[in-house]
Image (cartoon, rainbow, N blue to C red; front, top):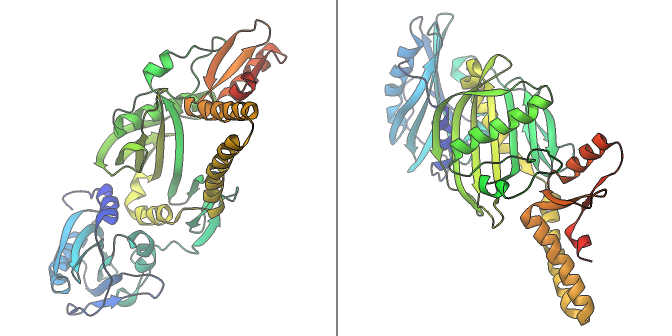
Length: 420
C-alpha cells in the first residue's frame, strides 16, 4: 500500500471515539456475514471470493463494498502490506448507529481465495474485543490473524494487581501496582513512576562522598524531550549492570493527551529504538508531574513494544494487555488508609496536651517535609558532616559508602529523629 499506517492513530482513535451501543440491524453488503461473539461487543464483517491477485487492490475494493453497512465511511486512515502483497491491513473509522467506531480492515490472498473483513468496536472496548473478534472465522474459512491462545488473568507476584495475558507471557516485575511483562508478542511496562529533580534543584543539592547526584535530573519541558532524557538516564544505570543500551532511532509521531490531576503534560509517543542489535517499535504514554517547591517532580509512563517487523500484527494483542491491567483494590485501600491515618494523627494532635501536641505535630510535619522534599540526611559519623540525599536512593547510597569504607561509617538520619 502507499503508506504504512500510524500505530499511534489506532491508540488515539481507541481512546477518543465516542460510542453508545452496538446493534446488528444493518443492511449487509452482498456476500458478507456479520460475525459476533457473546464474549465481547463489536463485530467482524467478513467474506471470501476467488482471488489470486493483489491483497492491496482487494482491500481497496472491499472498502467500497461495505459503504452501505455504515452511516459514514469506512474512512481509511492508513495501513501496510507484506512484500508479496498477499496480506494487507489498514485502520479505519466509521459511524454506526449514530456513533463513531474504529477498527482494522484486512485482505488476504491465499490458496486461490481472497479473504476480506472489517473488525470494529467502540473506543471503550476495541482493545479488549479485537483479539477475540479476529479469531472468528465465519465466511473466511480461517482466522485472518494468528490468535493469541489461552488468555488468562495473571496476578502480579506482589498481589498489587493483575493483567490479562495470552499464553507464553510472564510477569517480570511488579511493585505497588507498577508492573512489566513480556512474551512472544513483545513487552509491556505499566504505571511506572520515577522521581526526578530539575537541573536547578539538583545544582543546589551537594554531592555526598564525592558521588554523582543519585537519580535522574532533567526538566519537564515536554513529553518527547523528557522521554529522551529518561532513556539516557536508564542507559547510564543499565551500563553499570552490563545491560546493553536502548538507543532511540526515530520519532514516528507524538500526540498530546489530557494529563491526570497533579500532572502538567501528557502525550502518546510512537517511536523506534534499537536494543541488542534488534529494532523495536514502541508506543509510550508519558505524563510529566507538576514541579514541587523543592524542584522535584514525577515522570510517569506506560509503554508497549514489539520487534518492528511484527509490530503491526502484534499491536492489537499488546493493547489488549495494556487495557486489561488493573491495580488491586487493597493497594488503593492502602493508599486511602495512609491518608486517613494521617488525618487521625492530625486529630490526635489537637486532643493532646500542649507539649505532646507540639512534639507529635513536629513529627508529622517532619515526615511530610521529608516526603515532599524527597531528601534524607546522610551523616558521616567520623567527621560529623551531613549531606542531603535523594530519599529514594539514600539507603542505597549509605550501603555503598559503608561497603567502600568496610564499616558502618555512614548512616541515614530521618528528619523526625533529628528533630527529637
